[in-house]
Amino acid sequence: MKKNIYISFFTLIVLGAGTYLYINQREVSIEQVFPGKVWAKPIENLPDLKGVGAPTAKNCGNCHTEIYEEWTRSTHANALTDIQFQSELAKPSSPKWICLNCHIPVQNQRETIITGLKNGDYFRPVEIPNPNFNPEMKAEGVTCATCHVRVDSKTNESYVIGGTGGTSPPHPLKIDRDQLMKRCYDCHNETYTLNESLVCSFQTGAELHATKSNQTCSSCHQPEVRRSFVKSSLGKPVRTSHKHGFIGGGVPKRFDLYPDQIRLGYKPGIVLSGIKVSDGSIEIQIKNVNADHHVTTGDPERFYKLKLDGLDSKGNSIFQTETTIGQEWSWSPAAKKVNDTRIPSGETFLWKLKQTDLPVATYVFQAIHVRLKNNTSNYMIQSSGYVSSPYKEQVEKMKDLYPHSSVVIESIYQTKTKSRKDTSLSELFKRNAERKGE
Image 1 (cartoon, helix red, strand yellow):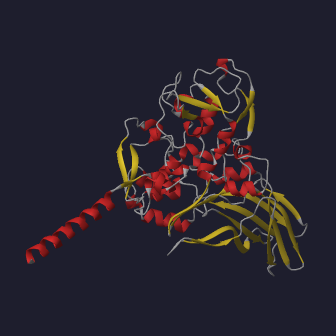
Image 2 (image 1 turned 180 degrees about the vertical axis):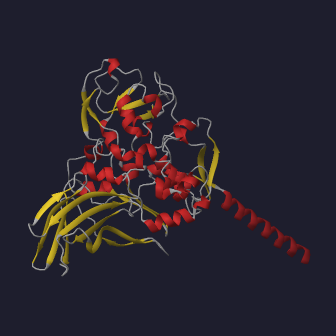
């Protein structure tokens, strides 16, 4: 009898261990873990395009020369090589494969294919080699194919999604302007909590829809331009095209990209609508005039720093104060938004403060769009040991290599004459190219 008890006990242990191992190692589909989430999977492997070859941006650029040149200067083209992103990606707490679904969104760009998740755990992806991996395409970040190439379900051939039509390109083409317009939302309009400290909060599309605006993302971020879609030697007609610099908040990914910001369509979402100095008070009005979404938007750690500097009659600084417009989050022990002073479309932020008794002859006001705080980049530099080469060396030098912020408005106010002079945007961006840190 004792022997039977031992056998039964041993059998239970074996069955329990087997059950545990089965449950712990079973492969759960991505669709089960993230139902209906476009960002949970990359775009399927894209076969070569007839008349083009591999669906790389470089190959697209053989004909679409101006569009390709603009794209090379864009945030999208730098989505993978972004130093801040590489630092975040290298953290042990980073679910890397999920992050890469937006930063290199096409399966051809991935060395492996994620077939599922062990026990549904997104930190335990099941990976197999990708026979269609294209390292050149991987380096292109958010490449042309992200929006413009898909696979025909009937023929299994790649085709280009166009928005206009009326020409005869060498590659298969389907016109679907609506699909192109909606593509932005797949990455730029998602709020999702992975766990208490991993939260995506990108609500730009929802903010745009709330304004009931008839504008699309492309209206501002891809300004219209009259030109041929392709190089002039092909003899195609001049039509209404869109710039492909995908300009955002005016803080590029590299210092050498500053000269292109205005050319590619940048203008601040906010304007300085008024400065009033009287009766012992100073009132500064900032209005969201040019953005049909909140400012700032997107990354919750972006914000505007407003600075006011008082100068005496000799030009010496004798008074300084500042405030911020943006979100405030607490990230530990759980991610939580604790304050939000951002400006919705069409609304005004009033900064009111007491006038100093000091003999201020001139006030200098600046609005600075901050993407990365100095204390955050300091932490990234200290934690660069997590990052692999060549990004490790770049993170270590990120103060010199990576723009943290841009001055987007500057105005000089004379207290005696109550006159105001605004610094031109072109002058500000010349200076921004030389600024370091926040």
